[in-house]
Image 1: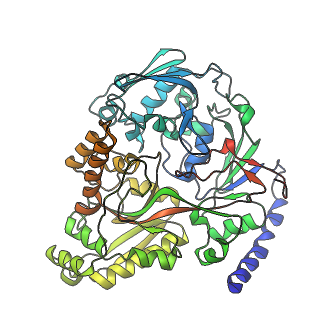
Image 2: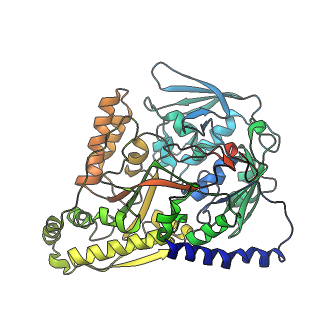
Image 3: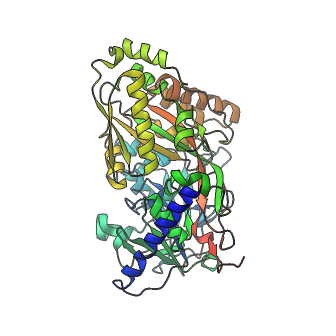
Length: 536
């Protein structure tokens, strides 16, 4: 403990002078009320395009949907829609927008704005990985996959300036949760049509959420300022919030220790080598969430198109060893994609640890003792933990199967782009549930879902997911989903689950309020406040 504490103090002293040196070079600007270490530099702040948490946090503060997440338990509550009606058959939802819902530039937010925003998500030209969220809406999947060219066929229409009708394919119990997700936030049509792909940098930028985008300086920060025209502006806790793009754990920790950062809420921003010391501190907050760390196989490349190869690669991974060596034993080994604790669902058991069976399968596939198996890559984004896990996988595959994997690391934006384009052999992945339902972990592996990113297509899997989501009986629905997930993690294996996440946050309880331990690990910025040091 003394060794790591000394290392921490040394790094802290080294970095504390950096902002002092830089201060003389930068123009004076007001201090932020809250500063958040936000992980990697965002790929985009466009709700229809973004995919990662570093992108989604500031974007969610800027663009709101029909519903928004309750900061305490992450359940959907009224957002820009103050109320809604759902038909007896569950197929028609009518939303009533607030009379005080305005763009930050003063124009009213209308039902037509939502129609445009949702059509934009399913438009193939947008290339939204999250277009699958609207597959539950009438003709959403057909439009996104090009079977229907007419965007007006999407089952959403304005019945009046503040009344929106949504027609669903089948009753969808989690549809209100989907409406709270950032992808379905309302965006400004005129601005997008005027500026195209660069619309997010327009001045002024009309936003629909609690915060305005004041500035986005690459590799410096995203600065948000309170939106005075937001319908719930009276309850916004801070005037200015800064999101810092930091993907180095030691740098994040030092900024936090020197009070230049108020909140660190990414596990990747906590140095693993200091974990045993840090997690015993009062300002460390740990809780389970709905998140899974896993590996994707690219089925469009040989030899990963052979299920025997994928099963063999999976069967030699000692997940408990990874957890004990790298994660200090705090996470749970994952044998399913869906985490335990997901509402109304008990996931199936996937593949375990069985090296003899793995070697037998690899031999059956024509690669006895790894002979003839080409060298392949493991693709991952920056981060010490990701690198350490990659090395463990590399050693296990070499030792047990005689095959050689090399590491390919890159920055966040390139990582997301190449993963979506299937420019990899195997790749590290993670998924944090968008809502508390097994579907958020399972529907992304349907053949036409933009978040699939494996090249795997299975008609039976697609059918089971669709059948499950048409059922209102919870037990029957869970049985269908379990059958589908068995295909995913035991029979076909386009993915290899490694562990289930546990959230680890750092913030001082006597200074920060409004962060609650919820299973989605979602913490709306408008609800987070800060007291002066030493005061509750």
